[in-house]
Structures are given as structure tokens and as C-alpha cells.
Image (tube, rainbow, N blue to C red; front, side, top):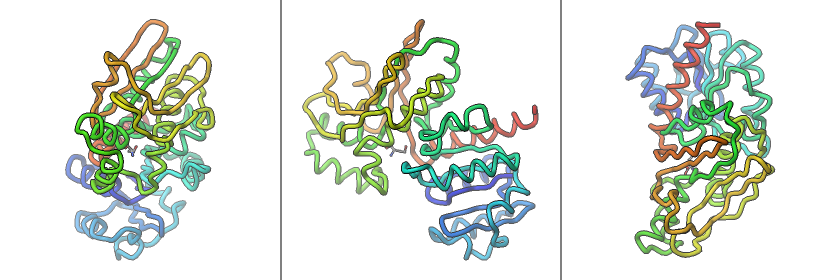
Length: 309
Ligand code: HSE
């Protein structure tokens, strides 16, 4: 039984995916204004009514009964966090994770802020976060699989929106202003554009990847320069020297043979260097469907691991 914490674009896509591909049940849905609960799980017409409810409107949908989050903990095993990130302090999600974990639930999250700010606190707990970094491409699994090798560095194109903008300028000759407007019109840019354009999203992903590799990098250690076009082959690169503990997100004009140049438009890429390896992965980042499928993969894993406990 699942609790959905957040009911925007990704939350709604996840509901569709869960409904069409699994027999999992959703027992509660919460948005910014409240939530509804049905301990036995919502039936198909109730799910449809929830999907028709406007943003912020689940508690007025007439589905289930209005409930506080703590009540919902009694009827679920997994809480899925698809709420927007708050990079100031990670709240309210951090407090929600604490109480849900205390009540014995597992957490599956697409929200980067709690982990980017408090990774150490949630390390070793049943918190699954594959959807936070390059959601369409399981690089968190890769990083976890490299544990044991001494990690030396990460370099990546971790934000699809800014890579799209730079690619439109670099490859298609648009002005920076036009490319930015186009990205906004296509709905790529976050509601708070600074999260993309000032590197916060990429920095948070870099921090999560470093921690998945076992290095306690924090968000405050990542220097950030805003997105700019510097000339041919400009990429918005997130990089960390994991031995020195230095990290930055900045626009860089890459050399003509740099492998990161192959990540075009909204494609993401990451290069992880360890004492014995240099691994490069290219692939999809965080579209709604990609993120929902990564969340589903983690939900299934959380359920499997709960059965083994
Ligand atoms: N705005 C992000 C991106 C998606 O463009 O990659 C959420 O991580």
C-alpha cells in the first residue's frame, strides 16, 4: 500500500503507471493543501476522480476521507515523495521522512532537497532515491555498485534544461534569450528558474551521487556559477574532485574531443572515475514518465526488501 506525498505532474503520471502496470494499491494522496485516505486502497473510479482534481484539490475531491499524514502511516508500507524541493532546509519533507521512518515505512523519493541537505541522516535507512539523479538512467544504482572502489571524481551534465538551452544555442544558432524562452515555453524550466539556471538542481544531483559513492559531500561545498554561453562547446558541467572534497557547477568550454559533448539537448551524462575505472553513462534525465518509472522501480525494490527483513 502506497502513500503519495505530492500530486503534481510526476505524482499524477506515477498514479497512471502504477494503475496500468501493477496491482499495487494507493491508500492516501497528499498535496500542498491536505490529503485523503482510504485504508483499503482507492478503487479505479476513485483514482480517476483524483486524477481529475485540480492542483491542490485532492482534499476537496470527495474521494476517501480527509486525513492527516500520520493517520495514513497506519495503512501503508511505502511513502513516495514527489513534492517540490525546498533547498532552504528540505522541509517539510525532512520531517515527513523522520516520522514515516519511525512509523516503520520505507521512503521512495524524487525530491532531491532532503538528501542533498541531509544525506548522512538517511544513509542506511530504507530510503530509495534512484529518481533523484538522471531518473531515466539508473546512475544511482551504478554509484552504489561502485562502492568499495575508491572514488576519485565525478563530471556530469546533470541538468537537462540547461543542456537543452546550450545545445539550441551551440548546435542550432539560437540566441541565448530565445533558447531560454523556448525551454520555458516547452515547460522544461523549473517553476523557480534559479533551480536550473543557477545550478542548484545540478549541484544537488552531484551531492547525491557523491554520497551514493560513499563521499560525504554537502550542498554548501558546491561552488555554483550561473548558466552562460561562453562560445562553441559550452556545457554546464557539474564536477567534483572527491579526493580534495571540492565541487562546482559552472559553464565550461569543453575541448573538441571531450566525451561529455555527446550529451546533446536534454540528454544527461555522467563520468565517474575511481582508482580502477572510468565509467561513462549517457541517457535520459528527469521527464515525468522517466521519473515515474524510476520511482516504480524503487517502490518494487522497497517492497522486495521489506519482505526479506
Ligand atoms: N529541471 C531538471 C532538469 C529536472 O532539467 O534536469 C528535475 O531534476
